[in-house]
View 1: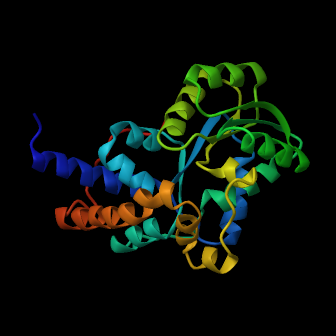
View 2: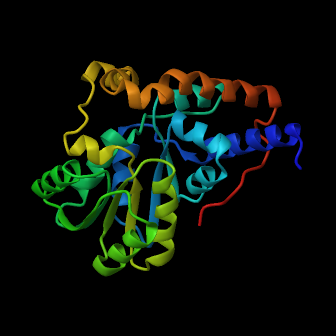
View 3: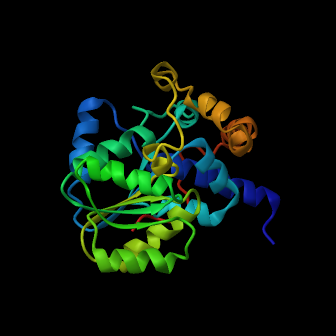
Length: 262
């Protein structure tokens, strides 16, 4: 059995490796270039977002960590990861949270085929109608509680150009890898958490001033206190305890990590 010290050291190395995998987007010009890049994938390509909650899950769940590390691209989502990167003197760039960036991706796919996998009706149906109004062609739409084989079959049959995943962590990360393994045509697979709930009208957005100051999490907690209490009230201190533990471990700058992207 691995010692507690060995486990702590591995977790610290994995934390640093995950942070180093995040692609930093410095400014709006870099964001526009990224958006153009994402509309032209040359193969099945997974985009995921790293926020404090994802880090907490990955700390104790190897499957969640592997799902993130096997993504083709990771973007920073939220002020927690910004502060974590800053603690290790690493650049942090723009906040590329999926709630804002995924709709930009969707609009960039206007006129192309899209699959929606996640959440439940009526929010899924609402999101489908909204995306169709944006000019997207929805070729598959499935609630997020089926086995992975269901989504693989639908994607193989319909060959979408874009797949928006909204199953929550860690299921969406695990299913996205299975989709990439099963598909051979160019497709962007986006792990979007609650994005279809936002697009479908289930969850309102915070006021703009809260979004710009990194306080949207507080608004979300006020709207959904029961569901998000453990994620924010408990999860934020836990996340910063992980940051402190990694700093104490001296793992910064050391090679390490679990899985490499495909």
